[in-house]
Image (tube, rainbow, N blue to C red):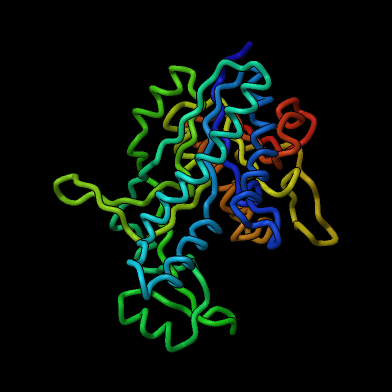
Length: 314
Protein backbone atom coordinates (compact mmCIF):
# COMPACT_ATOMS: atom_id res chain seq x y z
CA UNK A 1 0.00 0.00 0.00
CA UNK A 2 1.35 3.44 -0.92
CA UNK A 3 0.62 6.48 1.17
CA UNK A 4 1.38 8.98 -1.54
CA UNK A 5 -0.41 12.32 -1.58
CA UNK A 6 -2.43 13.48 -4.59
CA UNK A 7 -4.16 16.82 -5.04
CA UNK A 8 -7.25 16.58 -7.28
CA UNK A 9 -8.83 19.71 -8.74
CA UNK A 10 -12.38 18.89 -9.79
CA UNK A 11 -14.20 21.14 -12.25
CA UNK A 12 -17.69 22.57 -12.24
CA UNK A 13 -18.76 19.75 -14.58
CA UNK A 14 -18.28 17.41 -11.63
CA UNK A 15 -21.18 19.20 -9.90
CA UNK A 16 -23.47 20.51 -12.64
CA UNK A 17 -24.02 18.20 -15.59
CA UNK A 18 -26.28 20.50 -17.65
CA UNK A 19 -28.79 23.36 -17.43
CA UNK A 20 -31.61 20.96 -16.46
CA UNK A 21 -29.72 19.55 -13.45
CA UNK A 22 -28.71 22.47 -11.25
CA UNK A 23 -30.63 21.92 -8.03
CA UNK A 24 -28.84 21.19 -4.76
CA UNK A 25 -29.92 17.54 -5.03
CA UNK A 26 -28.70 17.32 -8.65
CA UNK A 27 -25.33 18.71 -7.58
CA UNK A 28 -25.18 16.25 -4.68
CA UNK A 29 -25.78 13.32 -7.05
CA UNK A 30 -23.14 14.63 -9.48
CA UNK A 31 -20.66 14.98 -6.61
CA UNK A 32 -21.49 11.38 -5.65
CA UNK A 33 -20.27 10.10 -9.03
CA UNK A 34 -16.93 11.89 -8.70
CA UNK A 35 -16.57 10.82 -5.06
CA UNK A 36 -17.02 7.15 -6.05
CA UNK A 37 -13.86 7.40 -8.18
CA UNK A 38 -11.94 9.32 -5.51
CA UNK A 39 -12.95 6.76 -2.86
CA UNK A 40 -11.61 3.94 -5.08
CA UNK A 41 -8.32 5.82 -5.31
CA UNK A 42 -8.20 6.22 -1.52
CA UNK A 43 -8.92 2.50 -1.10
CA UNK A 44 -5.81 1.88 -3.21
CA UNK A 45 -3.76 3.75 -0.59
CA UNK A 46 -3.67 7.33 -1.85
CA UNK A 47 -3.98 10.23 0.57
CA UNK A 48 -6.10 12.80 -1.26
CA UNK A 49 -6.65 16.54 -1.04
CA UNK A 50 -9.57 17.85 -3.12
CA UNK A 51 -9.91 21.31 -4.65
CA UNK A 52 -13.05 22.24 -6.58
CA UNK A 53 -14.64 24.89 -8.76
CA UNK A 54 -17.55 27.06 -7.58
CA UNK A 55 -18.33 29.42 -10.48
CA UNK A 56 -21.97 28.46 -11.08
CA UNK A 57 -22.70 28.15 -7.34
CA UNK A 58 -21.37 31.64 -6.60
CA UNK A 59 -23.47 32.87 -9.54
CA UNK A 60 -26.59 31.36 -7.91
CA UNK A 61 -25.78 32.94 -4.51
CA UNK A 62 -25.26 36.35 -6.14
CA UNK A 63 -28.52 36.05 -8.11
CA UNK A 64 -30.50 35.15 -4.98
CA UNK A 65 -28.86 38.08 -3.23
CA UNK A 66 -29.84 40.45 -6.07
CA UNK A 67 -33.44 39.18 -6.16
CA UNK A 68 -33.79 39.59 -2.38
CA UNK A 69 -32.04 42.99 -2.22
CA UNK A 70 -35.34 44.81 -1.59
CA UNK A 71 -35.66 42.89 1.67
CA UNK A 72 -32.22 41.66 2.80
CA UNK A 73 -28.62 42.83 2.74
CA UNK A 74 -26.62 41.77 -0.31
CA UNK A 75 -23.84 39.18 0.02
CA UNK A 76 -20.32 40.38 -0.90
CA UNK A 77 -18.29 38.22 -3.27
CA UNK A 78 -15.78 36.96 -0.67
CA UNK A 79 -18.66 35.77 1.55
CA UNK A 80 -20.25 34.04 -1.50
CA UNK A 81 -16.96 32.15 -1.88
CA UNK A 82 -17.05 31.10 1.76
CA UNK A 83 -20.71 30.03 1.50
CA UNK A 84 -20.03 27.90 -1.58
CA UNK A 85 -16.92 26.30 -0.04
CA UNK A 86 -19.04 25.16 2.90
CA UNK A 87 -21.96 23.86 0.81
CA UNK A 88 -19.86 22.07 -1.82
CA UNK A 89 -17.51 20.76 0.88
CA UNK A 90 -20.52 19.33 2.72
CA UNK A 91 -21.74 17.48 -0.41
CA UNK A 92 -18.28 16.00 -1.10
CA UNK A 93 -17.68 15.24 2.58
CA UNK A 94 -20.93 13.37 3.10
CA UNK A 95 -20.61 11.38 -0.12
CA UNK A 96 -17.04 10.33 0.77
CA UNK A 97 -18.15 9.41 4.32
CA UNK A 98 -20.86 7.15 2.88
CA UNK A 99 -18.47 5.47 0.42
CA UNK A 100 -15.92 4.90 3.19
CA UNK A 101 -18.70 3.37 5.31
CA UNK A 102 -19.75 1.02 2.48
CA UNK A 103 -16.17 0.10 1.49
CA UNK A 104 -14.84 -0.43 5.00
CA UNK A 105 -12.31 2.43 4.73
CA UNK A 106 -11.32 3.86 8.10
CA UNK A 107 -10.86 7.51 7.08
CA UNK A 108 -12.19 10.90 8.06
CA UNK A 109 -12.94 13.85 5.78
CA UNK A 110 -12.75 17.56 6.63
CA UNK A 111 -13.50 20.71 4.65
CA UNK A 112 -11.26 23.69 5.33
CA UNK A 113 -12.76 27.07 4.46
CA UNK A 114 -9.60 28.36 2.80
CA UNK A 115 -8.30 31.90 2.36
CA UNK A 116 -5.72 32.50 -0.37
CA UNK A 117 -3.56 35.59 -0.24
CA UNK A 118 -3.04 37.61 -3.40
CA UNK A 119 -0.90 40.70 -4.01
CA UNK A 120 -2.71 44.03 -3.90
CA UNK A 121 -0.25 45.04 -6.68
CA UNK A 122 -1.32 42.16 -8.96
CA UNK A 123 -1.78 43.58 -12.51
CA UNK A 124 -5.22 41.86 -12.64
CA UNK A 125 -6.57 44.66 -10.40
CA UNK A 126 -5.92 47.17 -13.23
CA UNK A 127 -7.81 44.97 -15.68
CA UNK A 128 -10.87 43.22 -14.15
CA UNK A 129 -11.89 40.67 -16.78
CA UNK A 130 -13.64 37.74 -15.06
CA UNK A 131 -17.43 37.96 -15.63
CA UNK A 132 -19.59 36.97 -12.65
CA UNK A 133 -23.27 37.09 -11.74
CA UNK A 134 -26.25 37.62 -14.00
CA UNK A 135 -26.85 39.87 -17.00
CA UNK A 136 -28.11 43.44 -16.44
CA UNK A 137 -29.75 46.02 -18.66
CA UNK A 138 -27.92 49.31 -19.25
CA UNK A 139 -29.78 51.21 -16.49
CA UNK A 140 -28.94 48.54 -13.88
CA UNK A 141 -25.35 48.43 -15.11
CA UNK A 142 -25.02 52.20 -14.76
CA UNK A 143 -26.44 52.13 -11.23
CA UNK A 144 -24.01 49.36 -10.24
CA UNK A 145 -21.10 51.23 -11.82
CA UNK A 146 -21.91 54.21 -9.58
CA UNK A 147 -21.84 51.81 -6.60
CA UNK A 148 -18.27 50.89 -7.53
CA UNK A 149 -18.69 47.80 -9.71
CA UNK A 150 -16.75 47.27 -12.93
CA UNK A 151 -19.28 46.38 -15.64
CA UNK A 152 -18.80 45.49 -19.31
CA UNK A 153 -21.13 44.78 -22.19
CA UNK A 154 -21.14 41.07 -23.04
CA UNK A 155 -21.52 40.32 -26.77
CA UNK A 156 -24.89 42.03 -27.10
CA UNK A 157 -26.43 39.86 -24.38
CA UNK A 158 -26.50 42.61 -21.79
CA UNK A 159 -24.08 43.94 -19.19
CA UNK A 160 -22.16 41.95 -16.62
CA UNK A 161 -20.01 42.62 -13.61
CA UNK A 162 -16.32 41.82 -14.05
CA UNK A 163 -13.81 41.28 -11.26
CA UNK A 164 -10.02 40.77 -11.19
CA UNK A 165 -8.51 37.28 -11.30
CA UNK A 166 -5.20 37.70 -9.43
CA UNK A 167 -2.61 34.94 -9.04
CA UNK A 168 -2.55 32.99 -5.76
CA UNK A 169 0.55 33.70 -3.64
CA UNK A 170 -0.03 31.93 -0.32
CA UNK A 171 -2.56 29.52 1.15
CA UNK A 172 -3.31 30.96 4.57
CA UNK A 173 -4.47 27.65 6.09
CA UNK A 174 -1.54 25.65 4.64
CA UNK A 175 -0.27 24.67 8.11
CA UNK A 176 -3.52 23.11 9.28
CA UNK A 177 -4.01 21.35 5.91
CA UNK A 178 -0.54 19.76 6.32
CA UNK A 179 -1.40 18.64 9.88
CA UNK A 180 -4.62 17.00 8.69
CA UNK A 181 -2.85 15.20 5.81
CA UNK A 182 -0.18 13.95 8.24
CA UNK A 183 -3.00 12.60 10.41
CA UNK A 184 -4.41 10.71 7.39
CA UNK A 185 -7.48 12.94 7.00
CA UNK A 186 -8.91 13.45 3.50
CA UNK A 187 -9.00 17.24 3.07
CA UNK A 188 -11.24 19.42 0.90
CA UNK A 189 -9.58 22.84 0.49
CA UNK A 190 -9.07 25.92 -1.74
CA UNK A 191 -12.68 25.59 -2.96
CA UNK A 192 -13.27 27.84 -5.95
CA UNK A 193 -9.62 28.84 -5.84
CA UNK A 194 -9.93 29.95 -2.23
CA UNK A 195 -11.33 33.19 -0.81
CA UNK A 196 -9.08 35.98 -2.15
CA UNK A 197 -7.61 38.08 0.66
CA UNK A 198 -5.00 40.84 0.78
CA UNK A 199 -2.76 41.78 3.71
CA UNK A 200 -2.49 45.37 4.95
CA UNK A 201 0.79 46.96 6.12
CA UNK A 202 0.34 45.31 9.54
CA UNK A 203 -0.25 41.85 8.05
CA UNK A 204 -4.00 41.82 8.76
CA UNK A 205 -6.10 40.09 6.11
CA UNK A 206 -9.17 41.41 4.34
CA UNK A 207 -11.41 39.71 1.76
CA UNK A 208 -11.67 41.34 -1.65
CA UNK A 209 -13.98 41.14 -4.67
CA UNK A 210 -11.94 38.90 -6.97
CA UNK A 211 -11.84 35.33 -8.28
CA UNK A 212 -8.78 33.07 -8.18
CA UNK A 213 -8.47 30.36 -10.83
CA UNK A 214 -9.15 27.08 -9.00
CA UNK A 215 -6.55 25.14 -11.02
CA UNK A 216 -3.86 27.71 -10.15
CA UNK A 217 -4.82 27.55 -6.46
CA UNK A 218 -4.90 23.73 -6.45
CA UNK A 219 -1.50 23.72 -8.20
CA UNK A 220 -0.07 26.03 -5.51
CA UNK A 221 -1.57 23.80 -2.81
CA UNK A 222 -0.03 20.69 -4.44
CA UNK A 223 3.38 22.42 -4.42
CA UNK A 224 3.00 23.76 -0.86
CA UNK A 225 2.30 20.30 0.60
CA UNK A 226 4.84 18.48 -1.61
CA UNK A 227 2.20 16.33 -3.35
CA UNK A 228 3.43 13.33 -5.34
CA UNK A 229 0.76 13.83 -7.99
CA UNK A 230 -1.43 16.68 -9.23
CA UNK A 231 -4.65 15.67 -11.02
CA UNK A 232 -6.98 17.99 -12.90
CA UNK A 233 -10.37 16.33 -13.33
CA UNK A 234 -12.25 17.99 -16.17
CA UNK A 235 -14.82 17.39 -18.94
CA UNK A 236 -12.52 15.51 -21.34
CA UNK A 237 -10.74 12.16 -21.08
CA UNK A 238 -7.50 13.53 -22.56
CA UNK A 239 -5.92 16.81 -23.63
CA UNK A 240 -5.96 17.46 -27.37
CA UNK A 241 -4.07 19.71 -29.74
CA UNK A 242 -6.42 21.64 -32.07
CA UNK A 243 -9.42 20.51 -30.00
CA UNK A 244 -12.64 20.21 -32.01
CA UNK A 245 -10.88 20.81 -35.34
CA UNK A 246 -10.41 18.29 -38.19
CA UNK A 247 -6.71 17.97 -37.28
CA UNK A 248 -7.46 17.29 -33.57
CA UNK A 249 -4.79 15.13 -31.95
CA UNK A 250 -5.23 13.43 -28.54
CA UNK A 251 -2.19 13.48 -26.25
CA UNK A 252 -1.23 10.55 -24.00
CA UNK A 253 1.92 12.15 -22.66
CA UNK A 254 3.52 15.58 -22.53
CA UNK A 255 6.85 16.68 -21.11
CA UNK A 256 7.13 19.98 -19.25
CA UNK A 257 9.11 21.41 -22.20
CA UNK A 258 6.42 20.37 -24.71
CA UNK A 259 3.63 21.79 -22.54
CA UNK A 260 5.44 25.15 -22.34
CA UNK A 261 6.12 25.12 -26.07
CA UNK A 262 2.44 24.50 -26.96
CA UNK A 263 1.31 27.20 -24.52
CA UNK A 264 3.80 29.73 -25.92
CA UNK A 265 2.76 28.95 -29.50
CA UNK A 266 -0.87 29.80 -28.65
CA UNK A 267 -3.90 28.42 -30.45
CA UNK A 268 -3.49 24.85 -29.20
CA UNK A 269 -5.43 25.20 -25.94
CA UNK A 270 -8.55 27.33 -25.45
CA UNK A 271 -7.89 30.42 -23.31
CA UNK A 272 -10.81 30.03 -20.93
CA UNK A 273 -10.66 26.25 -20.52
CA UNK A 274 -7.59 24.09 -21.25
CA UNK A 275 -4.86 26.77 -21.34
CA UNK A 276 -5.08 27.63 -17.60
CA UNK A 277 -5.13 23.91 -16.75
CA UNK A 278 -1.91 23.31 -18.70
CA UNK A 279 -0.40 26.44 -17.11
CA UNK A 280 -1.37 25.17 -13.63
CA UNK A 281 0.41 21.87 -14.38
CA UNK A 282 3.49 23.73 -15.70
CA UNK A 283 3.57 25.79 -12.48
CA UNK A 284 3.40 22.61 -10.36
CA UNK A 285 6.21 20.87 -12.28
CA UNK A 286 8.40 24.00 -12.28
CA UNK A 287 8.03 24.27 -8.51
CA UNK A 288 9.42 20.76 -8.10
CA UNK A 289 6.38 18.53 -8.73
CA UNK A 290 7.07 15.26 -10.52
CA UNK A 291 3.90 14.30 -12.34
CA UNK A 292 0.42 15.48 -13.29
CA UNK A 293 -2.60 13.90 -14.98
CA UNK A 294 -5.52 15.54 -16.80
CA UNK A 295 -8.63 13.38 -17.34
CA UNK A 296 -12.36 13.20 -16.56
CA UNK A 297 -13.82 11.81 -13.29
CA UNK A 298 -15.07 8.51 -14.75
CA UNK A 299 -11.59 7.66 -16.05
CA UNK A 300 -9.68 8.49 -12.87
CA UNK A 301 -8.77 4.88 -11.95
CA UNK A 302 -7.80 4.00 -15.55
CA UNK A 303 -5.67 7.14 -15.81
CA UNK A 304 -3.86 6.26 -12.57
CA UNK A 305 -3.15 2.84 -14.07
CA UNK A 306 -1.66 4.52 -17.16
CA UNK A 307 -4.47 3.39 -19.47
CA UNK A 308 -5.89 6.79 -20.43
CA UNK A 309 -5.74 10.49 -19.58
CA UNK A 310 -2.87 12.84 -20.43
CA UNK A 311 0.21 12.42 -18.24
CA UNK A 312 2.55 15.41 -17.93
CA UNK A 313 6.03 14.83 -16.50
CA UNK A 314 9.25 16.75 -15.94
